[in-house]
Length: 341
Ligand SMILES: [Zn+2]
Image (tube, rainbow, N blue to C red):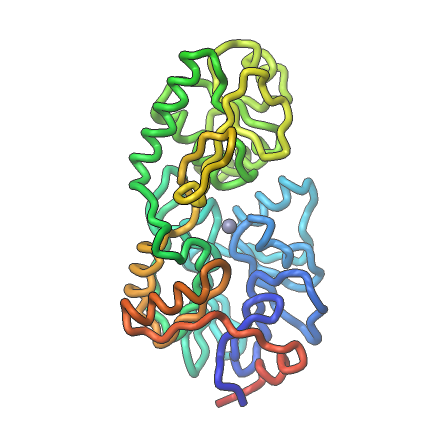
């Protein structure tokens, strides 16, 4: 018998009273027994489960981005859509939008005894490529705290978009190539869309980012860009007016590059020779507080980042119980899942 009904055991687990469900598992000791694996989105710190041999669930978009970046096919995967409900004995798992990147989702777990939501990474405002995270009332909320510190407050997205476009125009006018160094999926596609919608500046993307771009185009997010490894891309890069978007493993970086990063950390940090913009795919502190308020759970469990600080701020501002996500010992894990209270 356990007090907690939610915990961390190399992944997020719930006391379902039966079905063994694990969310965004990370490398670690192998779990005994049959586990159903759920993956919230395609960023590599969340996708370890897609490389494991058991049955796994993710959205079609997440699976396709994962497969195209790694150039391999995942076996034993079932794709789900936002709004889908999956039944495991008496436990139902519902797929909710997370607003973090194309295909990102939260999972609601409803057992006869309680409902819980695991957010994965969330963003609570609309962007050019995603819609704000859904807010689903539940008993237990497991939420991220990447920017769960009161000092992390992001400017309005439209202001950041305008700043990025204005800076790029200035750099081009002075003969430099705006060069954004980002992860391969999520942010780069938002940047491509920004330049497509509000400028006539051609966008060149590195081959890795181009692979993720193609999945976006297949899934209704229209992106116009040149792949730097193609003849058209190479021709474009000989001209003087274009922007470059690349992963941090820089390839084909132009000689006259003006490097920039887009990250929430830019609120408090500078990045030496890089120009930085606080454009993030995560919720900032206020978004997290408003999200928890709307979900109104009995208790909040917090993982990643400022767990202690966000927990005490939630208790102080909202009067809702909150704590870092407790670690469940592997030896207790099967009991944990089979516990019926
Ligand atoms: Zn992420």
